Amino acid sequence: MRIRQLMIEARGCEADLDDAEALQALLRAAAKAVGATEHAASTARFVPHGITAILILAESHMLITTWPEHRLALIDVLLCNDAMEPRDAWAVMKAALRPADELLQEVVRTVG
Image 1 (tube, rainbow, N blue to C red):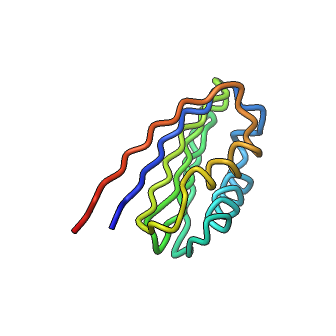
Image 2: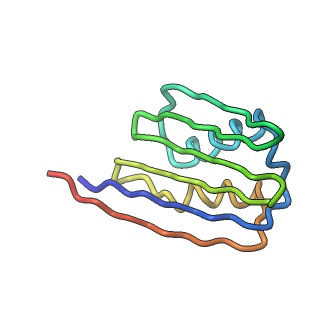
């Protein structure tokens, strides 16, 4: 089995990075795009601004943390189902976040 983790640094995002409901909906849309199964969701709001939203999946998790004042979002997509492509989840998020620049790092781990 392979575990794939895609970490994204999205800079210059045009989307509202301080909208917790929209960010959680975005994670759900990304999970749906890869066929992942949701187990739980949680969101934390920071003062004066910023959000961390996580979607816990049967296949692991998707997470986004934002710094609206810097138009920055850090995203982690960790999937332990070989049939699921984390870059497909990122494509959904990228379309909504509309970053000016992105940096992707992928780590592939083999288990078993």
